[in-house]
Image 1 (cartoon, rainbow, N blue to C red):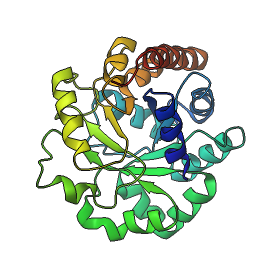
Image 2 (image 1 turned 30 degrees about the horizontal axis):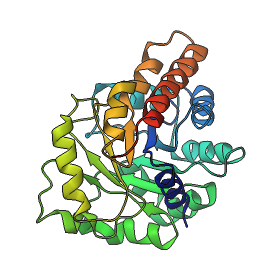
Image 3 (image 1 turned 135 degrees about the horizontal axis):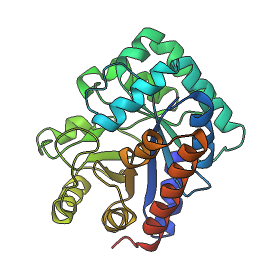
Length: 270
């Protein structure tokens, strides 16, 4: 089984959800970002999404847009992001790591080269938000052929007619965007999330992770009772933005991760 399959299976046995954390590679600089990345598993992250910086992150709100600007200003690129994954894997061979971003940097890098280097570096999955299923042959299919999961986003506006096409070829887990809008937006109601998870389970056996707008341990615990995974990004990145020093950035992110993990671990999936 893949690392993602193994991790979600282990957590199902424990009757709890995964804490899925998102940070942008190279934010605020390479060394600080790498220290945060390496510290996340010990702080309680079960799955890590690592953002690939891009100049036009259209699905992201202000917090992650600014994270992209900081990372690009610090000269982060796809080569350095893959190198971060290699550095991470020197000490951690178990935690699933997913690269998340947009197709343009991958296209520029070269799809075949990217897939080969991502696999070699230890990447487990991809979330590429601007690659719909109609374009599976361009990235999804070759990635999965190489053993890299391709994780799809679904939203409140993805209706039952569209869902099977969106989920076709999906693997790893399904990422449900709980609110219509950009990252960091307001949280959805629990009733809405419960209904959405029930609807998704009628279409797929993959684990379902919920993101967008989750900022506190209490919110994370509430979602953890309904889904297989809880995704938190903007709230973590806010600590990087507000930090005066690299040490403050590292401590802020990892402290919040620990608090979120405690909330998730106390919750039991109903």
